[in-house]
Image (tube, rainbow, N blue to C red; front, side, top):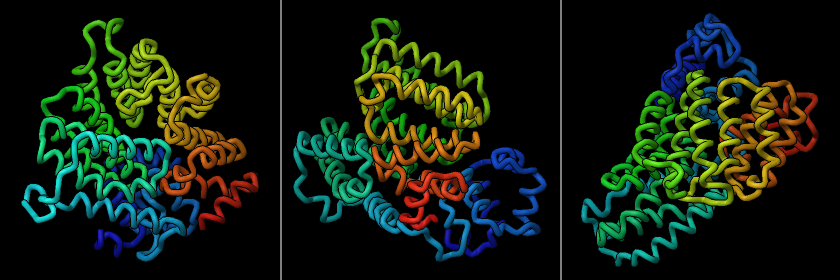
Length: 400
């Protein structure tokens, strides 16, 4: 990345467009621009002198606006997130156990103890307490690796789960490449256990989509889903149905990424059938899967497809369901951010701002630390019709 930061802004746009596997035409369509406009920007013929345009480009490329700006530019409030990610990166860079370093010989914790630590870490993530989780993860990763080394059979589940949490957090904080390392370790550790593989594949789908590998994500999700699917759905255990259904949702989101609306709808219908046999209020394998989760996924798919009218309709239906209040704060806040995006694209900054304020009330870190949400907040705040509460929040975060 060091050399990329030295490139002109247009070349940086081209670099990240390539990283996200977007053609100039697809990139232009998502921006509402012409292919010629994109080409001129990337060649430096056309200047990018509007902050709002840079923010729109960054949102499509799923990176911080600061990445497209000057080398030292960094929005206020992001340094803590960056420091947290670097601590996790350092933890993933240690190879104490395979290299037989002295740290590897520290007493391995009992499996039940590290299992409780993993449960606590999952709870911290689902409550969207991301700064606290970045503090927990380095030591947790060291503990689960040592425990697994001492007892590979019993220690495998905590190891896989710790890597799943790590990957989920890193996707949230805008570092999908590092998340890929964590989920790759989860998949390798899970190999041989189809349930663990399916659980880790949930995060694999998130990571692949965040890295622009949506076609690969769709194929992988479908393979994992049908491996875990019970032979007879009506008699399938809810945990297996939850994993299968969540993987189908991930596949639907990947299909929507490539504008395949028919496939996305079919996959969501299939997931909805499974959800009726699970019901709301459960959290098997930390999926939160159920009829309400599928309804929220329909909103996310509609947003990805650019169908803002249906996105708003699905949102309004989903939040009126009883199952809405049973979902984890992280899940609900992430949905509100997706829905806010739909309202903004429908030229309704008032409702978009209202949803972001609701998300900030439910899970502040989802709005204040997640790059996509911060960029969305900045876009909404610049509209003259925006409520003052949004403007004040943007100013507080250094985005105004």
